[in-house]
Length: 279
Image 1 (cartoon, rainbow, N blue to C red):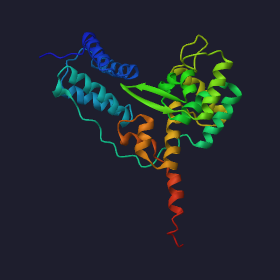
Image 2: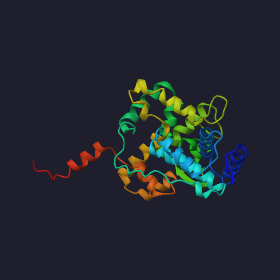
Image 3: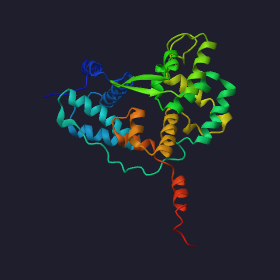
Image 4: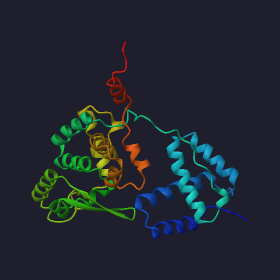
């Protein structure tokens, strides 16, 4: 039996993902991974050895987590086509005990970014605080509407699930004033000049533009790190990972644990406070 990845098969798989109500971001990612594999294959027919070689090829260019993400996309495509024998195992990754200080944003750095944003753009200044004070994903920002600010809560629909996110009263008051001053009477608050919701790319670029003035490493500045900062701050106070998972919209607590990992330096400070060293 000849097995090749064709444009027709990719199109059928995409329609399947749409019917499964996968998010547009997830669908785009799956299709991108499969097309990259198709390009690497060129005219070769598929077999298990070739798939294993591609896995080795990926490990030479990407981090283990990225390799596993790509393998997941390809395995899903194989399952859809009932090519079960072509599926390969993910790489084994040792559990991360401490967060990478070169990538995780601290509260002090967040405040520096806010100061830079305040002088540059009121919209960005308020947008960053909205994500960081609620823990929402950047893709969920479109659910922050005039109506939700008035109700002091937003209904977030993502990945086929729905959850209610409570908005701080102080934030709601500022959001309502911002909307009124910018003649936004209904719908999404954070929009472009043409009235369409800001997308991930817009927000990413705006945040990166603050790095030099705020003197914060670019590797730490992107929207999802605001969500991480919310998670770590919430957990440090409440110590309730189950509740935090609900707030973040996670299906698995294991995912939430990744968000709450502290840096090695913070752990060092904590163990020094134990008072068990007599030297």
